Length: 281
Image (cartoon, rainbow, N blue to C red; front, top):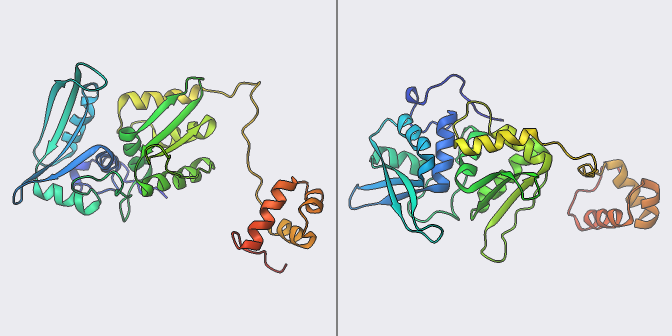
């Protein structure tokens, strides 16, 4: 269930009321790409630095924040470019920083420890913020739609997987890759279209270039020569009872019109307690 507040302006609500779509998005973006830093005494700051081409998003953050904030731009050398132009948004208010910290934005290094906020929040706006900061939307090199998220947080990876399953029906197993211990959660084809349509709705707060990329996914259609997307056939209690009665993957496969491999795996899961036994077997 999405907790949305219709026709609301963030300025008339408590700062970072995550039921408000703009604040939910901002919080997700800041969790993924912001940095909350302590200073001496009560000093400190929240900052987020992004490509200068996306500075308009920071101006919107500034508009929605009822505390003094600043935006600065700079040019520096990086491993990827000799001259990288960036824009940084900075918030110093102790009251604002305390509010963000209480909602789940940690001080210091946070990539593995961030989790979705507790309480009511607009889920698709929050996830759009996370994906705008640490994800990608568009077409693969083969011309297929995709939506992906790269994160070090187990909680965020699992939350996106659960949410996307509700929206698209696509199941993803979250597992860190062996090279750098990062989760890469990826959706392609129709699930990517459905997820992008849900997250990037008309008029939402987002990076303009990612909104445009998400909007373009709606134009894709599966080629006539491409096999239709596979939909897993769920096991019913009646089928489980038949499988247990046969107690043989080979004979049960013939009776149920399933593969021997599918019956063998299901029988093992039932016997080992991986899935519950059917009632009245």
